[in-house]
Image (cartoon, rainbow, N blue to C red):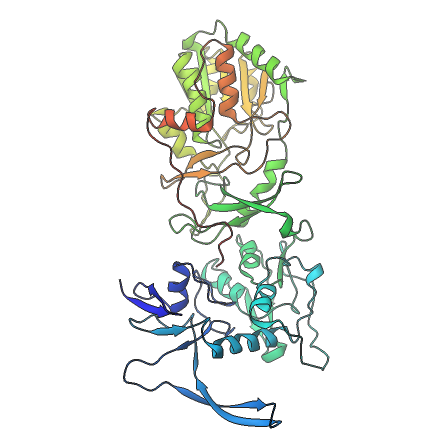
Length: 535
């Protein structure tokens, strides 16, 4: 692989790479604002300027400049190498690039920082971006001096509502045009543009438009400063109190990789951020996915229920064991959940089908919704492919379940999850005479009227594996502690198995995973980028 020198280090690159992209791939950060690996190159912020040595046998390209001489108290003509933007300069074999070792590049970055902050309100204490703003970070690295401008700063519009999810503060904007390029190139909805020039520049909406496509929150995410803020996260939490954990979006079958940002003090998830995975979601997420964290804390089943009344979990498990005692295998059915992880579904299938002999397997989940050709899939379940693979054949639908109940083929039903796509409230009246045990995270059709409901932890309260529509197995890490009396579904199933005298050797989630892989196969974790790796 060809290489070039960057501050004396050999950096390999691929055909078509720019200097900054090749550097980022090996973990070297060249300061930048306007560049993003998933967007076209604008080269307008000039923060990534580097000094490039001439090829052998050629003179360096020099510029005449005037610099202030403190001793003479006058400007003196000097010459310095011409700096190049690393985001635009193609990587070439044998280049000698100087970034952190170039005094000229350092001085240029300091000047860029000063220019960007001349008219900035510097309202960091009340800015939602405080703690993760590049203006703050780069000022410490490349500026650290007060403004020299004595004139009144330029005033621009504040708290401009761009749409139902985004608020814009033009005074904080550095006009990097990341948001403009994103809505045009990724969201395919070019509703933003830059107006005016110089220190009067600002981002505006197209006439008669709102920022209301399916990827509006990504415009806030790609903003490197505090100009765009999300109304959902605005003034809710300070980022330095939050911690991040790797997770997988369960909003649809795409299975976008994300970071779940949570406050360890109150075990609350406050937002999702996209996590880079070039095979799945690249650098992006849709609004539905980024807001799906809200379901973690809404409509939860927090305590065990017997006949609709809260009871201790162990008593509910004993009651469920009694209900299963004497159930005939030919009329015992299990409903797997396309919403839950492989581990949860595998544990339930192992008990009800493998140990108790149930011959009827069904699948339930959330109903289909709207999709597109960017990220959103119409299948709003994250693990349908995983459930089908575990069942060994396509499980029957919920519609088939109602028919089986009406014909008397099902008298006992053990279900996982709460939603049942393609069904109505009237359909569930057919289950009135069926003995039902439900493992559920949220309240829903499958929990309503169940004899026993056991509170299952959500996807962020236990490690789990999800298989997306492409067949990729993706592991989500545990983020927060389970609410109330909830426990991971596989653990509740294991407790029920012990109560019915058919114990499963599942003490940890790794035990479930080893069993799924054949018993002795080692469980490995996928390699990941460091948490919060910059882009």
